[in-house]
Amino acid sequence: MKYVYLKQKVFAIRDEYKVYDEVQNVLYEAKGKFFSLHSHKDIFKVDDPTPIYSIRQKVLTFVPTYFLYDRQNAVVAKLAQQLLAFFGVRFNLLIQGKKYEIQGDFFGYNYRIADENGTVVQIQKKFLAWGDTYQVAIEDGFDEALAVSVVLMIDDFIDDKRRQAAAGGIAASSHSSGGRNR
Image (tube, rainbow, N blue to C red; front, side):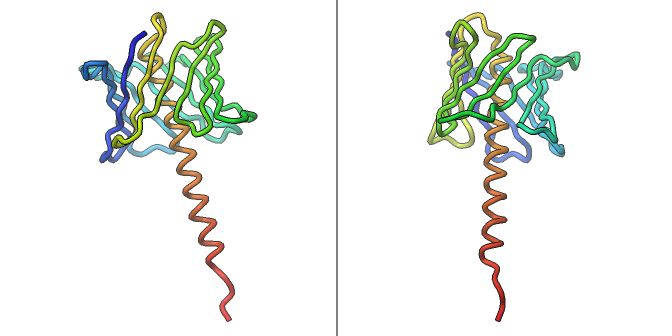
């Protein structure tokens, strides 16, 4: 089993992550687009200017859906939320025709990715850290860059839900504080 750590850059205009190994060597970087109508991130190996993967969110869908593209712009993976998930968050993940299930805990901080043989990736969100920080345990034989990309797709989903909840709270408070002037 191998461990990598994703750390979000806190004071950045766009989403930026660095991915470290167990001894704090930078392995990958992920950078979001500055202006984009949908979520779009590129994942780079260190010292390589060409992205190895790109994440794009499909807009105008019934359930949140993300696609992972390789360097040739071919779809490598598709992540979609399961609507009927009790006690946690669930996603369906399809990687080059192979099905995986992602199950998150009730609070959405810990996830596991499993195929028919069991868990292949475990994700833990770390607390008391600046920005989003994740520890990712990857089983031997599972593609490390692919695992990192899936974690970034899950993080995008979580961030979108937080933004929607905050926007809903702002809209609700503006409606409830208004009233009739007499």
